[in-house]
Image 1: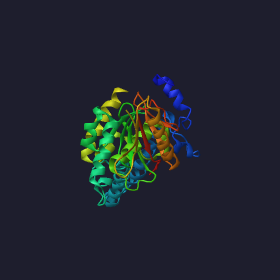
Image 2 (image 1 turned 135 degrees about the vertical axis):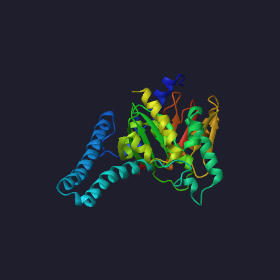
Image 3 (image 1 turned 180 degrees about the vertical axis):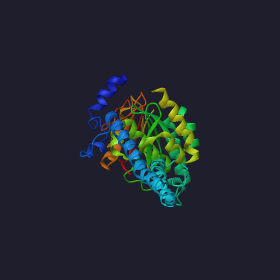
Image 4 (image 1 turned 135 degrees about the horizontal axis):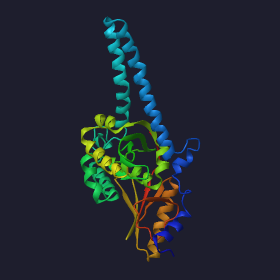
Length: 238
Length: 74
């Protein structure tokens, strides 16, 4: 018989999947996500964004320097420099899919209202009293982790790194969502994240990394308070 | 009272409930738990520190065990 939490953990560990998320262990060819890989990927995304800006702004400036009448072509270059990073940030901001948003499973014609309420009740119990109100208001579940502060939706997650300046946006979902209500979809991701944070980030597909304000501009207005709450918590860890 | 629940299309279904000293009820919960594992579900136990742990056996001391499906990159 086991008693204390430590003894209980030891006993349970004997039956775990090596302490690692089974879904991550199955992706043996994929590099595991760690503090180091996040820092590296963040730098790569910044370099890529800078490269996009250089590639489109430079020819625009050169055209204007050669002949001012080429400004329509230069404008096209500048528009690309503006649009490409904006589209990338928008793709990242759309990743999570907040409960109750237009793309939510709860908005499907076949959605079962009673099941949606039951699922939200369990999810509310899982997130705890502190985060329940934020979840109801924004449709995103906030969870503190070792890598930063997470916001979970039905189909993805946003991670704010310590300091709250950089965001990582991931696509991750249930392998067979079938008829699962919206709350259950988030609950699945929340449990997997709590089981193995790095494994969770390994399974998820990275959509975007960049400044938090770039995500904030493109995220649904209703979900912005969740991003601000995550930022406040992430700043505490700076 | 400990609870074993499955996330499903109804929101969730309570599969079993047991008290730590009720061996019979726990045994029934273990059978329900194994049946879910056989269906490809993953057992996730909420720990006292707020984390969760994948389990392959159902400990009598568990408080809440949730059976969930696998996740994948989108």
